[in-house]
Each structure stands twice: as C-alpha cells, then as structure tokens.
Length: 344
Image 1 (tube, one colour):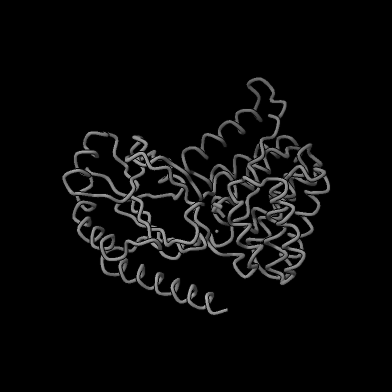
Image 2: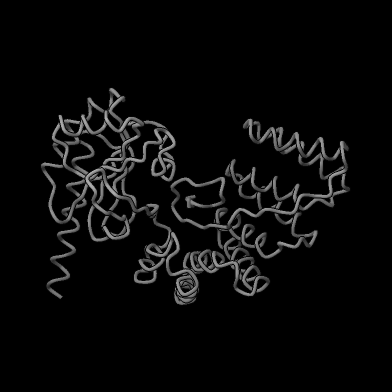
C-alpha cells in the first residue's frame, strides 16, 4: 500500500508491506434534491470526514443511503473509503459489495477496490476472492483499469501462483512502462519472492548543487533519506552523527540524500556552506508541504528512511549509532551478494 498504502486508496498513501492501488473513484454526484434531507445528510457526512470524525461520518452516509432506500452507490463507496482509512478492511469490503449490488457505472473500478480490501484481509479464501474481483475489474474495463493487473499479480503471487502473477505484472508493465510502480514491478518479475516488500516511493529531483537524481536510477546502491531543516534544533543536534555516517560509508555503493523542509533558501544555503555539507540535498521551499516528505508521510523531523539496493525500505526512523550500524549491515550484505555473483 502507499502504496501496506502505500497506495491502498488515494486516502491511504502510507508505506505498506504490499502496495495494491485502486485509484480513488469519483462517482457522479447523486441527483440531490435541492435543500432536501438526503442532501443535508450527504453534505454533513463529507464535512465530518474532513473534520476527522469518521464514525459519525459513516452514520451520516448510512442515513443518506436509507433516505434513498439503499439506492445510493456513492454512499456505500464513501463508507468503504472511510473503512479503508480506519484499516477496517472487512467492513470496507462489505460496503463495496453493497455499492456493487446496485450495478453502478463504475463497477470495474469498484471491483478493483473490493479486491484490494480482500487482499488486505489476508487468508486464502479472501485472496482467492480478491483474484476474482481483480479479474472482474479487468474484464469489465476491457483492460483499461491498469492497476488491476498490478493488484492481480500481487494477489496471485501471495497465493503461490507465481507464474500467473508474473504474467499479470508483465501485462501491467506493457500497459504502463513508466508508471510510479514500474521499477518495483520489474524487480518482482525478476524475483517474485520480493512481492510484499515495502518498496520506497520513487521520485526525481535537481539537487541544490544542480545534480539530477532519481531514486529509480539509484537502484544498486544503499540510499539513506534524511529529512531535516535548519530551524529544527533536534536535526542540528543530530547533524554530527549524520556527517559521520557520510564520512564513514561514502563510496559508489552508498548515497545519502538530505530532504530539507526549509522554506528559506538562504538559511539552507548558509548552513550547508558553514557545515561543509556535500551530500545531495532535495529542496522545494514548501516546508511541511515538501513533496517528498508528503510522499513518505513524514510527521516529524529529524527522520530517516533507509533503502536497500533493490529499492526496498529496510529501516525507518533510526538515528545515531543504530542508523550507522544498519547502514553498515546493508553495505556488508550488498558486498557479499556482489562477491557471490562474481564467483558464479
């Protein structure tokens, strides 16, 4: 997920163990009666979602559905999204089945979402039902719901049907060769055992020094993302440890990328120069709305994400000696793999 959530839904973009991704579906707005009771309930439910009162929102969407005698697929879809957000996947599947029973226009995408909810429940029976839902999404959309192939591949591999799963993933790559999950899918096709790993969301940028970098192009290296800011006192206190990691491990197998949450470019430039910081820095001037920090759902700094040579997240939030030791362990493992490969 994230796409688990990584990318479970647009509302669930956390780092997840296995990233399935049904695109968030937008229904046509129901034919709302002007100033009617249904409209008030539906609008109030959405407002409650924004406020974060999810349980109350579910009740209001249920009320809205009852006012339409249960004939409101949008209501059940909204309820399903909320249950996804609450990580209540069995309840999400139930709400999506209610929406599907009404035969809405977007039945293909709802099946994709249903399959994701079933996948996240786990268990052989739920996984087999998920496979059926993904196949139904593909059939109804005539292959246009591309993420259904991605999701189907993961589900099949989890059921130990690796050959079928790999074929589904190959179809996904053919249809979306430059998609955000493309690098991950290629890695899984090469080694199906990697299905279910927490792959790092990819991004590309121009560093403050003008260097063009892409996480996908850094495959084969150990990558450390260090989220920080010059206004963050704990970050500055941590900087000597970060420097020591760079000095100890910097070589052609390791790269560190600072992700600055600063808004003032001069403050950042001055600090980098003063401290002699030479590793690449990502900076977009958006502070807490920093694109990469949002992608990785960073809620506090300093924060670190350690990624292995295959693009898999191996550690989150480590600092100081623990972080240094983990970097060393990953590099040692990488060197052993390289040595083993050269002997074959």
